[in-house]
Image (tube, rainbow, N blue to C red):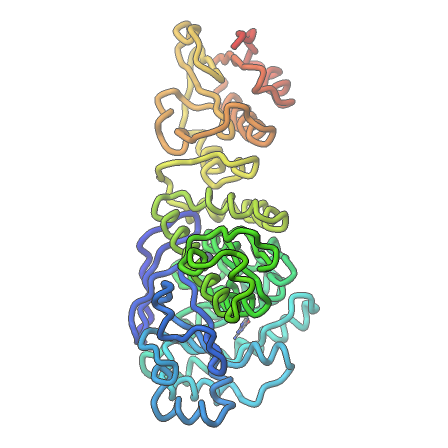
Length: 489
Ligand code: GUN
Ligand code: ZN
């Protein structure tokens, strides 16, 4: 087995990795364009020009059509598609979830994928709909685990095997499923049955599904978010630790005359301008695009260009250490994405464990930034400051500093810290000079904790009126703290 995934750079729970397959190494995060073996809007041999490194197709569709099956068995999957890079194949599970049945068994479809020379095979898992009962979700999950174990025993040679994690929207089932599959050992872990969540904009539920499944996995295992192809949610999913995506969206949206951007989707008839610089958009005006005889194909090409552009932007953000800033921006494109952002930060204790402790910058982008893992980490490490004597806590520089033994800087959303640390990450954060309620709340709670922990020190708090928050009352009622008269600023 050549199961190999090397992580080369990290940010939050996101990472840049290298996945080794029989047909070459793939750099993640990346999107696998979905190839329909029957209808090819864009030929597989052209996919590299858009930035694709790996494709995904459906072995069940190939299996069911004599002409495709015979060619695949005779010449191999790569010859059938005319693509010599890595190819993943799905098993028919999606058809199972849509039509309720399929004409193959798990054993047959694993055997077939092996015979046609796929790089990553998928067993016949059961994608359980999000709103089924707990009992039904558990029952489906148990069948899925049995089939996956069976598949693990059948696979020979260097083909990679995916182990889809199921469990509907039950966090404990997702985690249990991931843990059991981890014990068996798969090469890639797709998170399944999330398409209905994305179709109904249930991004906050999607965050729960990803976070609970990730908890059951080895953090170094490669993760595929099955059926996720809209670039608007890539940054969020990557920050939560997803490495592979697959996009049929580029073609399906095009068929519906829809134009994808990283901020959302337009119907082509809504467009007066083309807000993109890809070769398609530079060569056409909005009017020309609408009227083109090959509008579907042009839209599919544009959709694919922006899909890969977003992935490159995400990789650059991981490289620079500002992935969470990108996530916060993207999550402002839709109120349901904003819900997902807030939900993601409920997992900050977990994100903090994954997050590299030193990065270059921290930009405060809004109230949600107060919940970032770096802020949480600062609050957990307050005991590292031992403070004695007379201490000034100030919200802005003042001449009075020389009158004290120690000076602490008060900086929302963090709290109070010794002046000497001002240039150390994350305290060197770029923040707003008019702090919002949420950032003040975190900063005051941390300051109250710090004052409580240093009873030998006598604190004076010098506050500008822009820093007022109800917690100031609590702070000023503390025995070892007095509020200084504020200076006009
Ligand atoms: N495509 C989209 N969702 C799924 C899933 O849960 N399982 C499989 N095998 N394919 C999918
Ligand atoms: Zn374009």
